[in-house]
Image 1 (tube, rainbow, N blue to C red):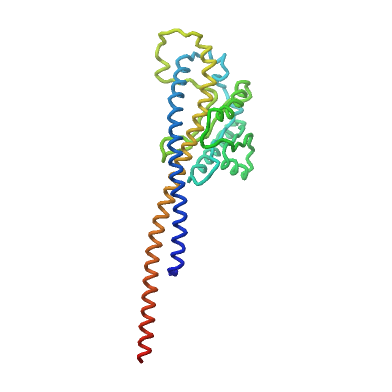
Image 2 (cartoon, rainbow, N blue to C red):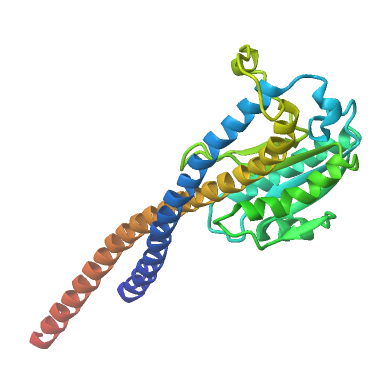
Amino acid sequence: MMKAQDIRRRIRSVQNTRQITRTMEMVAASKLRRAQARVQGARPYAAKLSEVIARLFVPDLAERHAILRQPEEIRNSALVLLTSNRGLAGGFNVNLIRHARFTLDELREAGVEVEFHVIGKKGIRFFRYRREPMATERQDISDRPTMEDARSIIDPLLARFESGELDAVDVVYAQFKSAISTPPARMRILPVEPSRGPEAARPLDYIFEPSSEEILTFVLPLYVRNAAYRVLVETAAAEQGARRTAMKNATDNADELIRTLTLQYNKARQAQITRELTEITGGSEALRG
């Protein structure tokens, strides 16, 4: 059994660690609320853009708008992986990296030439270690992404898609369902595939000024940029949710360990006191004899 002094020293160490994890949990919870608000703000805008495109789309427009071009065969594609710059978020980055590796293997097995873009320090470090070629390595996207961040990522790929250099652009990101459910997901941002939902089947009872083609020319790039922004804010919110959960689990584990160590300390202290009393009694009896 450990000595009471050693156990007390370990209790203090665990208490210090618990204070850190508890603070990190509170910080992550605060950031999560703001990140969740950005996600909730981005989703309705994306849904409305999708509805507008679905209402205006006719097959002939795909020939005049490169963003709507659906290639018969995908030969060259770009895959963008979003990870975080910091750890201590449980399996958040591991799950994203695993999903990206699966997607890379799937595309390559289908004969697709994949151009790999990685955003986030954790993903970059992993694929550098694996010696995976990366076309882009970015660590400048914070946990509060902006529309300018989305534009800087997607606009170069959009231009290359419109020129025919790329046939598709996919993103591996963390889908934010709730603070405790953030599964990795894959979204095809380009080409844009108009929704086939009920809003597309409703007859139009109004005319457009300017024409529907001019409106699409303006709306389609907005839709692509908003899709890029949405995966950024969802991943940022998912990161904070995963970190809060991980730090709460760490804090709970520290509490349980402190209770266990306190019980051991009390037993060790009781044994020490009993031993000291026994020695005093034995010495007293020896003096009497």
